[in-house]
Length: 79
Image (cartoon, rainbow, N blue to C red; front, top):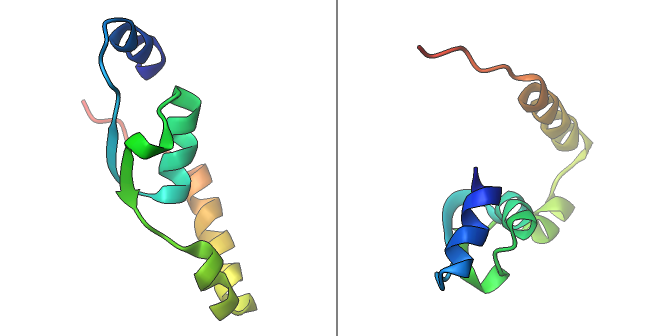
């Protein structure tokens, strides 16, 4: 996977970039583990620090329920 490929590309002089439609919190977490520097990442901005004060307890409950569904989601096999 990526853990094996990226070091090989870097050793050959490649600059590594990530372009993703994922929200920045997820994209930055993944690319940090892969060793891709933040300036080399383009992703969808999601200013959670600005949005969270606008949310109420019901909103957070819905988000937690959605998170739990994502965590326990099992994709169907696609032959």
